[in-house]
Amino acid sequence: MTNILVSFPKSGRTWVRHACQLAGLAVKFTHAGHGGSKKEIGRRFTEIPENLKDLPLAFLYRNPLDTSVSFFFHLQYNLDQDLGHLPKIRWARRLKIAERRLRLHFQNRMPPKTLEEFVLDDRFGVDAVSAFNRGWLDYLSERDDCLVISYEELKADQVAGFSRLFTFFGKPDVDVEHIVEQSSFENMRKKELKGADPASRLRREKPDNPESGKVRRGKVKGYVDYLDEATIQQARQIAARHGFEI
Image (cartoon, rainbow, N blue to C red; front, side):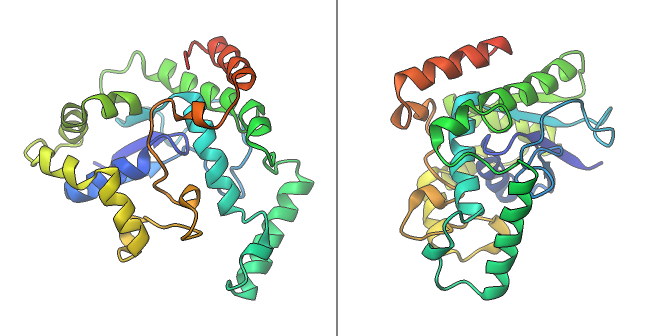
């Protein structure tokens, strides 16, 4: 049976993926049609995909505003909104990036350029994250063959949280404490900067800018360092409509 973990982008799956690799676990990680690919950007959640219905799986979710802030930086550097800052990339990639941006522009799916606009945009921000998480949480609420775990829960007690996850995936007999130590953000940042292990998917688009990395900060409620109080209050009202507190 295939191990599956579903999450909205930037809900902590890079961290979880790294820990699962250290545990020797093969896991299929999916955003269930709402990732950062050109076909998925800006899609609103409507229903659980047919190919995932009735499958035992783990669902990982995170504070919607923290998720949205992290997703903004992910898309900003993934879409390379200013190609002039990338003089060393090949022309083939430049053309591919330009084509992708042009397609998104004409389909009205290009992400807002400012963080404040992004987190309040119903296609990308808190509303989109909350709708996705609420849809999955409601769907899984009556399932006893699935695991629901939050990023905040993992951060609060990493040994207990990863023990639950590894046990659910059928591998309870691993040295969880060692894996937690090796999966610390400090160790993951070191690996990201070295770029020595492509299988880990740890990379930094711009080596001199930590916001462009897969491993950014991992801070709970780190949004307070980026947003003013007025934006936070608006985001709080949006999340509350879906039953979430930020």
